[in-house]
Image (cartoon, rainbow, N blue to C red; front, side):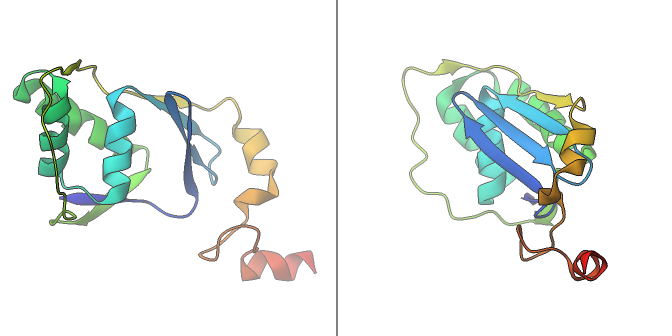
Length: 146
């Protein structure tokens, strides 16, 4: 199984050791840290569930059962928040997954949701966009503005 970002209204940016994911439609935003950052990147790249687990296992110190359970919980939370959706059963070609002797401790991937800026983000005209992205307004909004 692979996933994709739900749409152009879901944007993300890496800032230092955190990824901020913003839903420009409903105004909520999310904070990802630790291995959640890697999982988000792997999902956006098109890695399958198996490929994500193999990559995490090569670099993080944990039991496969723990990683397996926590990965599913994290992916399900991304789906529940409508940040990602299922795409296909196949993953992208991944080469050179290399294990390391010095693995980093596994931390449970977590998705922190914030809604304190919803009203402000909804007022921002950047949320008025379509498949063409911003700054192009959707046709219906552009007609109303004129």
